[in-house]
Length: 420
Image 1 (cartoon, helix red, strand yellow):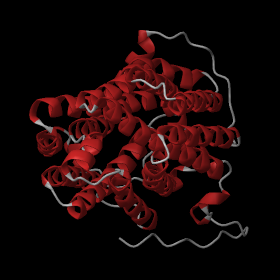
Image 2 (tube, helix red, strand yellow; image 1 turned 180 degrees about the horizontal axis):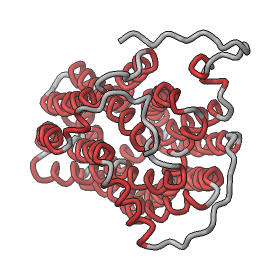
Image 3 (cartoon, helix red, strand yellow; image 1 turned 180 degrees about the vertical axis):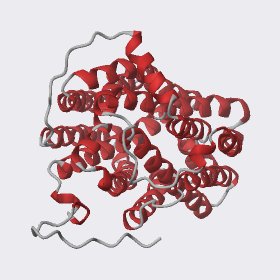
């Protein structure tokens, strides 16, 4: 559908909320800068970790262990982190975590430049990074609905996603170039990027209202479980993305495909391809938000994600592989936008940290667990079979979820979602 026309200004002369440019919402530019800098640094770091691990070991199992090392602290800490996000200053939690990420990257830079990095040092670093991310992500996820009104959220989410993906395009490419000068240079760039993200987060205008301290207990998460069970659309969107990411782990095998299958050398272009597709899709969603049949389009996008994964697994052409990865990245954006609207806009602020933590436990950690799964399956049946099997599994899950969550299939508009 064409974008909804802007309504004329009311008699007082002030434009209606929908006409206010996004950058006029206080705190939003700082949020976008901080998130983009953090994302860029994370992508550069992923290139350094992947290439350095494989260079030291020449083992797909080592790539699997990198994913597991980041998954374990995230899985163990996300729920306490969600509780902290609902009762402490969210902005200061994010600042603290970004400082830890900067320091851990700086330590890895010193080790790499000194020539004394070992695989176990890499595993330890990504565990620290995973622990910091466990506290950072639930808090950061709550920022956007606090910075923009509900009717602006889908468009602001698409802008945020486009910048996130732009960082994901440039990050791997820059990381690949920097890795040519050594892993230490990559880690040093990450440390600088995380420090910039920390400064940006400090500039975000958020009002912190202290809440009564509630001790961490099972009851606080039983409340979240009941909340989500009563909202099958939200639960369906989160779990669908969980299995899609868990099974479709093509990106975890990129070092192997670049080095041993496609013989493409440094994997910067392959790493950037999903994000390039995601940027294009995000820009389209800013121009034409998902104003109709959002649920059905999300299911179709996940199915396309599965097909693109299979095509990438079977391809022996660099051009076809890049196109498949770009399509895969574009399809993933649709799922991200729909899921984000459901989770953030249907949740009251008092529970938003814990619900975001559950969302990140399902989605964020599934990236690392998907890397572990892909690496272990690849060690048994090879990287091609591992990635192809994951794409086929994604298609099967999509069909099953359409039958299990018919309400999610019928979901229409995103801009009229509000807490229930």
